[in-house]
Length: 186
Image 1 (tube, rainbow, N blue to C red):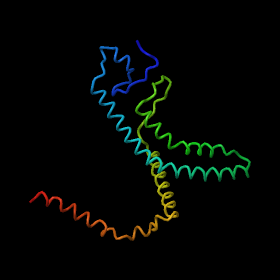
Image 2: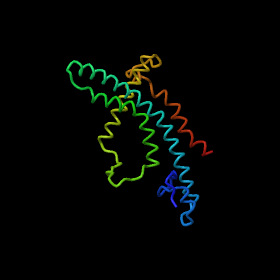
Image 3: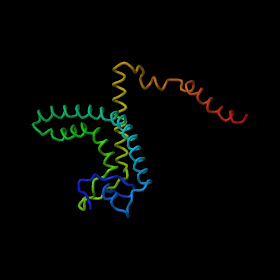
Image 4: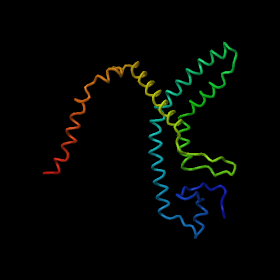
């Protein structure tokens, strides 16, 4: 007898209701599926922690760009007597970007029940998605560089970074790595 109020438990192969699985002798919850569930949620926790950092790194520049774009579009739409609705959609999208990352991660582990009328979605990355990722990363790096440079902690410019004698900085590390095999020869 299925309980409609039961929350589904993640299994590697499919979602099951805990009460129905416990009542059914034909489908006992075995240790390997339980271990798989624990490992899956542990990895998800690590991914969510990484998203908390990376998402914030990308989110603040997106919001800044959306606010600047919305402000410019608002002035333009007021002067030209047109709608600022597209800029408003981009602003709402940028504002919810960080939260959507957490939601997407959790929903990928606990997917909603499949609907018959839902279209098939290709999960593979396309070249357009790769270009978007590179543009967003470059925008975020530029914004964070300007923020750190204007706040004071970053003293150099990109030209100064190119002039750093990198060979002196890395030579100690390279020598240490090359000397590791000598430890095992003696």
